[in-house]
Length: 250
Ligand code: AMP
Image (cartoon, rainbow, N blue to C red; front, side, top):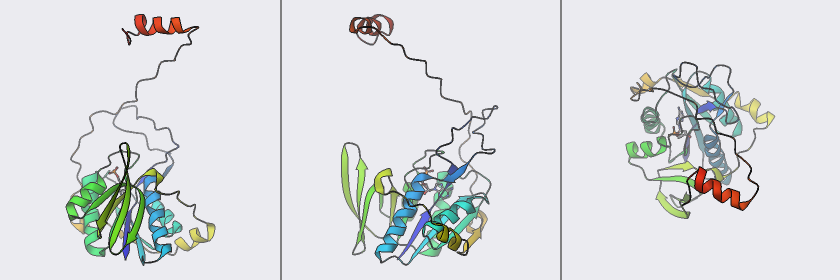
């Protein structure tokens, strides 16, 4: 069985993003970029499945600029087998990415695609679901546990107020939630080995997919600054402030 794992290169989660002075977007100059954390969890899960047996190959794919190759290499160092870079300098929206992934699925024939539940830059939480719709495959989103048996995946999902367990027929789409696993750090020998693993270079045109944006960004702005809190001396003062100053109690 083959597993496809799409990985996105995003601003590192430790970076405090800055809005560009002209408010057209976020400043990406000299900013540390990394693999989207939910994609790391997806790679880890695929590698664990391979280690358990029954998975022959893990293919990682990224849609992004030339530097997204580094993101693919990180996944290869974690244990994936080969990569595909679909190179573009345009910011591909989730629908464009899903269309490209559908073409890769057609060409590669994986039994499962494991994606992150969301990319931490656009926070869309759309690509996996759109891919499921385009392929007409079952989807189990927000997975906190995945177990393969007899051509099915039993997936425990985090939902409001609890956990739900679904059984989906393969081929299927799974998207990862935070508690699915803790991704490994790549060891130095594996980083060296990853340098020899193949990465196929493609473009959106090779797949005949138009990735022109469908959305127009009107303005990007910082959230309003939080005002400092105050300390009160007594409960009576607290009640007074809530009642007479803030008006939150009657
Ligand atoms: P999103 O729908 O943008 O929140 O992204 C959800 C997941 O879709 C990510 O965690 C990735 O697994 C995948 N994905 C989104 N954009 C890309 C991209 N440009 N290249 C590869 N995978 C992507």
